[in-house]
Image (cartoon, rainbow, N blue to C red; front, side, top):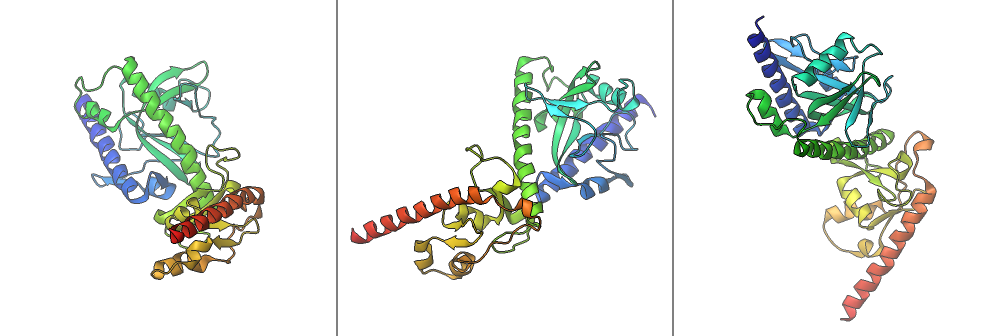
Length: 324
């Protein structure tokens, strides 16, 4: 295979992978199951998977550079974000000249866009692309990886002066900002996936099982005191009940019984109000099979107190409006 043909094949396969990922994310969201990633897509009658047991992965069809790098939730490598909010990705093994490490180093030298798969729970990955290897530290056995904008792929499609040099301060700031936002989304997606798995991927109020319509609701808001992204501070809710829970239209008592705010119970409206909200009143919520994943009663107590106060304020507002 000539160098030009090899380079052209790499471009076409890589761009096909990016397009395929765009389609999958539009259907399933940015957390994809390993089954889909392992199956991959078809390119010129060949199946191209995006993930394999090894973290640095080059499918057979590609001539030289890896396609993806993967961090698992239970793997042997301690990948982490450094203080500059860039990813530190561990070498494979301890030999800097292992063929996988050499391949990733070559991807860095030639500015090859890669796919990054970060495990949020076993079998599910937050997917980001393009990512670039921008640093190599053989002493500490790590590569530095940054996420960049999708438009930077243009410089790979047709090498021009589309993308500024990686040493440019504007490029560095942009990549640090984007990678930092990925770090934040990792926490959010990890919380969602852990909570939904604990509740067997169903709404704990109404049993709706469509993942696209399910959220992980915080009992104590994220960023507040004790608002940690842990399963015991979360409840799996459909989007309707999540919104009602956030607006204190529905509350959960510390004994896991659902309450609907008094003024909402008195309202007269269509069947959605009756079946979607009012009929939830006094029902016990669905709990995880594992008791250690049940909502923390102390956190529910604090949340329930706010729900009760919201009911008092609402009743006052309604009575004041009636007198006016």
